[in-house]
Image 1 (tube, helix red, strand yellow):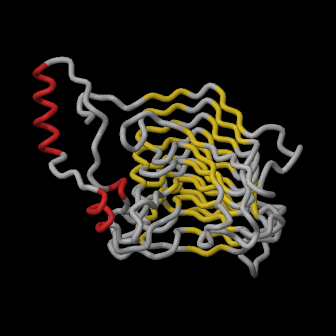
Image 2 (cartoon, helix red, strand yellow):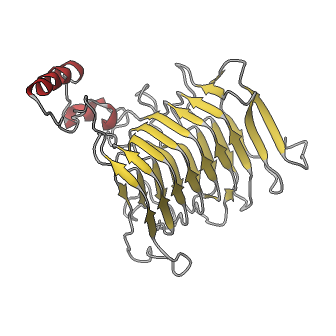
Image 3 (cartoon, one colour):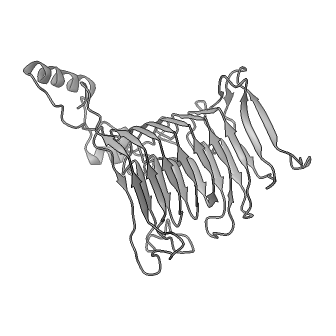
Length: 335
C-alpha cells in the first residue's frame, strides 16, 4: 500500500466464507488524509472471523500507529474478533502531545467476543478491547461486545444480590441452586492468590478513550457480560458521546466512567500532568444489571487539583445526561 500510494478510496475485501483466520496481527502505518481505507467482509452477509487459538499472540489484532495530526480514515466493517488475550483494535496517536493525533476512523457492525486474559491467566492482562489514544472524531457504531474479562476478582466466584423469594418453595429451590452452582465463594486473599497479574483489581475496559481523544462517538452498540467498565474516558478527552447503547451485566466501577491519574501515581502518570475530561454526552442508553447483577451506575471524575482543572470556555459543560434508563438484573436464578 505504501509503495502503490493509491489516489482514491481503497476497499480491502476479506473473505468471510473461507473459515476463520487464526492468530492474525497487523501493525498499520499507511494512510492518506484525503482518502479512506476500508477493511470489510465479502460476501457481506457474514462477518469474516479472526480467532486466537490456544497459543494466542501477545499483540492486538490491529494497531494503527499514526501521530501526524491528520485524518487517517481507517474503516472496519463486519469483522468478528474472538478469543484475543490482548486488545482487538488500538488506534494509537501520541499520548504525550495533544497535537500528534490521528482520527476520523470508523468501527461498524463488528463483533468482539471473549477478549481478555481470563481464559489464560498466565498471559498479561488486557487494558481494553478497543483502545483509543489521542485519536479523535472516530465512530464506533452497531458493534457487539460479549464475554469481556480479565483474570481478576470479577472472574472468580462472587456473591450475587439476595434472591427475592416469595414463597417457601422458592427459598428452598434458591438454596439448592446456590449450593449446586456456587459452592465455593472465595475470600479476598484467595482471589489475590489466583491473580496472575499480582493485582486482582485490573478490570478490562471495552472502549477506552484516553489521552486527548476528542469528539468520538459510541452509538447503537451492545455490551453483554463485561467484567469491567463498558466505556471509560480518560485524561483531557473531551466532547465524547455515548448514545443509544444497550448494556446488560456490564460495568465494574460503572457502565460509563471518566478518570484521570493523580500526579503522585508515577506508574501511570505521563510526562504532562493528566487532566479531567469535559463536554461528555450520555443519552438514550439502556442498561440492565452490572457485572454483579446489581444496579448499573455511571461514574464521572471531575476532581480539580492544581492546574488540572476545567480547561476554560472551550467546553460549555462537563456532562450531559439525558433519557437514560437502568435497572438491576433480577431473574428467577439471581443470587
